Length: 268
Image 1: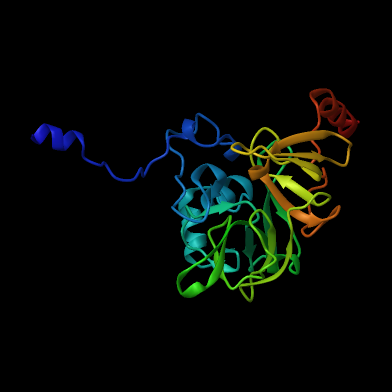
Image 2: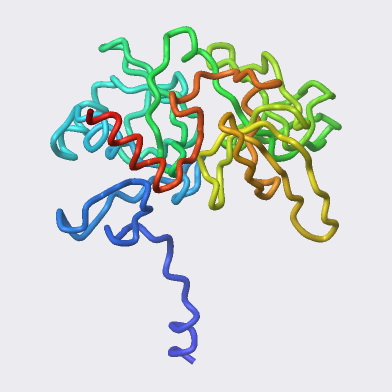
């Protein structure tokens, strides 16, 4: 009986992460150590985020060690979505805005065409809002309507026109919805999952498959056509105009030959 109870015992949450098991888009080397910083529980999934310590130490080069990142965060110098965060393992995900008031810098987290997190520098004006994908719209207790976003926000009394899969423009200063874009043909979208992660294109059509995943077909600025599941599509603008600034590559995925030619041109 004792052995049976011990065998069925729950071992609790995982608190460690091996370096080799860390997501590839963190771009950690293999030989620096055994462990990687495991993101704290938060608004983004473990494999769809990047912890603050990697952003400040490995990407922005503001620190050499985790201890230095801890000292920076303890001085309350880092803001994520206009809120001070002191947890060095705080998960930062897609569309999050990281601000460093002491240096006057603001960054938005996007994906590049190779599916890696891109720390995109933005202006002070653009850092005042972010885009959130609507995951669900429902009615709660006392018949109060609410919606749930991709970054874990619950917003009450939304506009009745906002539906699931739409995108809202969320003000980080007033914590309110200041606009929205519907999931429609002809709107600009970024892919947030699958093999086309990070690509940007205009929606051309949507195939409905009852009982399975709907398929969305898109076309990028280079004329390349690609398709993905509807759940991977994140609307970022109305028509061909984006609500947020996007990388210089315009989300166009280059072939191996095109990539090589681009590198040769840049070296000349």
